[in-house]
Image 1: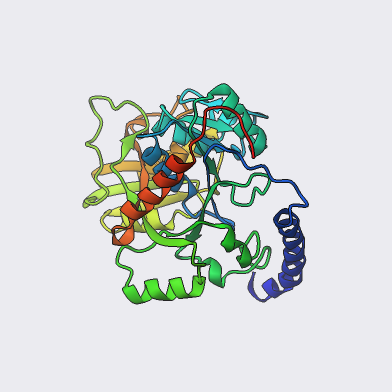
Image 2: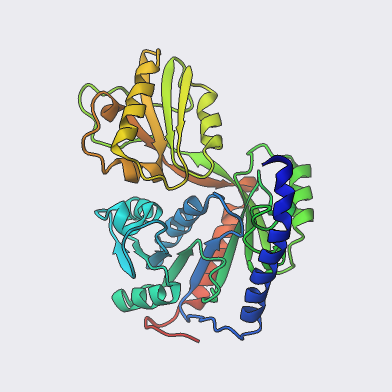
Length: 365
């Protein structure tokens, strides 16, 4: 965009006034916001682009489902259905959206639902499954119609919110002052070897309030999983930490695939990256690009690796030809807390739910 980007600054000022008025109206209780008696945990951000919401939502669901009956509510971005829907592992992307379906398939014992109207979504969850003890709101930090009991704000280490600007000049959806609504701030996608000095500088610039906790998390790439049942002729399961002599086609439709690409490039003999926009809806003609890239690889051992989010879309193609079909794997992503802060964070979340768990009925304050 070059020098012309500065022309967007006046629009950012106007956008700031609009979002500022909206938040003032909610803060002053002029616009109504519903607070449910059941524990409601909000996970979100105030920036455009991926900050790792889904891996962190999955982390919370995995943590809490060991002791509580958990539900996850998302709006179901880009789904073609309307209203409230329960998502199951057998759902389609068109019905549920890709990220809710990803969560449901990872944790089939967790209730996953979608509804653009989050207030209605919470009510319907409690009507459908009244024994639900905690609800996780995915990507709902800006959804002021609900006042969550606990809010987690994510900030990408590589795109710090403290040095960003409002849309459309920058990537912020609302002003930095709204950080104060968060109970916990997570600096995501942090390098595992971050220095103590870097940590202190970030903490200083974020300038968290005394009631807020701040932690650093990094992405953790787990063992690849096949998209389809492997046949007898399938190659061994790829080891992303040891891809010497291996050719990779990396297929992504996520906001920021660079960390995954860099991770694979560390050991892969050759890598071809086919990159699509976030939440990309794959089409039949895209298969030809995948076949072509796969055939271009010269390594004796070849794979097509993709993300968990992309995998839920690609699984709907039943006509992917061999050998690409057997070479298709997705790499599940988890998170790690730096400085072994996971125990402190886990206790914070579990204590909130345990102390605020109510009788199982639809109730609002």
